[in-house]
View 1 (cartoon, rainbow, N blue to C red):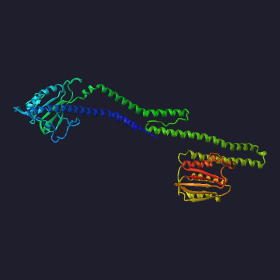
View 2 (cartoon, helix red, strand yellow; view 1 turned 180 degrees about the vertical axis):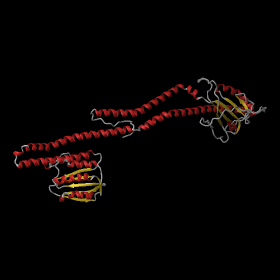
View 3 (cartoon, rainbow, N blue to C red; view 1 turned 90 degrees about the vertical axis):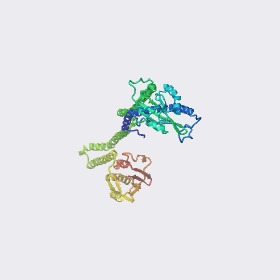
Length: 514
């Protein structure tokens, strides 16, 4: 049967689910921050590439070059060269760094300055729509075109600019102080606290001819979420529904089977014999184990009650006959003086015989009840052959013992083994028509096998199905109680053994494995 998770595991799962929600929300928020930062960097890369190609056209025009290769060194065979974002919001964020200008000095006329002058108006017009600050610097880190009015000034190279001057794309995120007061969520001005700086080298035939730097405040997560607030509300509603469904599932997994067990217990208390306690479906392991234990207990109690009722009915019936006989004889003996000695002796003998029969019946009933009601029979190391030899000696020459390599020892109480084998021998002696009874001891898969063979006329087909029934006997007039074979069967079943018989007109063999 499929077992569900334990209650502890369900509660742990519910607690972990609730605990993981804020952690997952924080991770999602950080991931969204990284996504927005990467998006900002990607936008700056795209803008820088366009500016770089515009500058290259102007630079080629001023240089009188009709064509060149824009690819970096060693990448001339590549058709496409993707420039991927490199920022990581989970890494170090640089502190603010104001632009450091080098001392003023006249800049000589150059191809780069003339090319920069050609595209500067383009930079100003583009800034109206993309809000980015863009500068083009020559290989000496002097500004040749800018959206910030720093043309003809040289700067102290920042780390990202140093990397670009050496031919490597670089980017960095620096903290910024947001405007005070903050603009509204829907305003075009950014509320972010990080500013992205990129530096893209411009190549011509494998040589760096300029660097395009771009800067823009990173997209603000709160402002970005405000733009998608409708979808966000739907997601929040879905998350709340998921939390509610999970809580309901865990609560139902615990409460539903408990309610089912309660209903079945009330049904059993009301006398419904068909109710069982085994719960179905998704159920915690502890509750399923409890339901199975209750079901086994109920079935055992029901079987025990049926056994007691049947036992009491049968016992009362069996005791009724000797009690009636004793009562009749006692009533006749009340006229003791008018009876002669042989009559008195006959009635007294009948009372004695009925009393002995009742004593045997009660003794065997108590033995049978003790065996059938025991959860497990107590054991004890017993030397098999020596014990059986002593048991057979009681019958003199009427019983023969044959040992065919049986187990040396058996874990069983002495009186139980004596009762099991003794009842089989008694039954064989009574029905053996005076012929010797043969008791054979052997081994069967490590267990003791006992065969008791008589030479009687066998068991009739009509009596064979009733052999193991309590109180069934064909020798009631000779003191038979009909409990001997029932006791044998009870002992064998209690020890998880087997008992059977084979019969024919030439005799009957009872086989018992303990």
